[in-house]
Length: 75
Image (cartoon, rainbow, N blue to C red):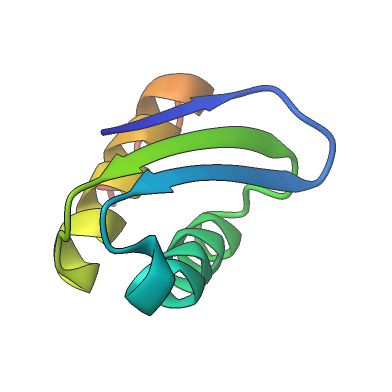
């Protein structure tokens, strides 16, 4: 689950059962996804149970669209 709200800079709170092994990678995927969408200031709360990178990207994108109202899927 990913929720996004207002923040200064990118602040990522990660709760994950695999944080010891993959926490750095999960945060990198979240950061890269948001930067790709042009989001520079946000507070992100992510709860993960071992999702693949593509799933994390999709969840972050959906949360960003809901938070910003910017539809990234339209031409």
